[in-house]
Length: 356
Image (cartoon, rainbow, N blue to C red; front, top):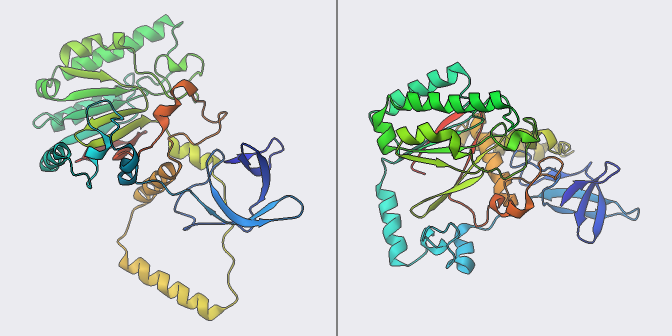
């Protein structure tokens, strides 16, 4: 595991000890934009062990993840979600009749939509206005699922603050009043509430800073009126897992990208080779590849980099305990083994997931 020693030196740790690293010559593989390397992550290093005890690192690589089909060869009989669907049913190579039927139906339902909304601060007037436009857009053809993510309050809510608790309850009452104007959504859609750092009661001791993971769902007492209006309401933890036929979707509310970018290790740029002819050939080949490859926007590149980083680590929170505290009794919920079908990280952005 990559970690900083008490003296501030970047080191590699295992249960037997530590080795100080010299990363002045390190080049990440397959390239610098493929994934991040942060303290707390597992990493494969190639280099030379020097006489003074340092390890000079030449290349750095994330451990490759195990595909879901490979995991099914060992744990195919296990029902990880407890919904009656074992792992081998969700793989394309499985020969079971039930798995084939479920995959056939799942593929045929092309009209199914999930809508995810992040940072739903209900105490902000603009939020309810935006939700009204969103519900109006989907009122004629309601999606199967609305994933509504916190923070549901712009300020931390503590149990000792009666005024904050009362205001928090009134915000959900206002949401219920808004939902009552759209009976088709209330009848046909499921509302899934995923908490943020400011929601009860994770913010009791954090004051809105990074709280312990995982987090319990919003107490249902605050959603009494929402339950009266909407037929299907669920208060989920963060992270949570959703089973859809043979698919498994992990939903979490966190700014993982921001936390990774703040602690990522910067490696030096590769040195220019003295052989100019070889360099010109390499530059020409790279230019041809860029012409052939379709243009990808920055948001998509960032998402792909995050996905590769998390899947390589097999964990939603690959950070030291002082960066992201973890409730170790429930740390297994943060694992990404076996690999899920999709991972949805909710931040201050609205997105739609179609055909998950």
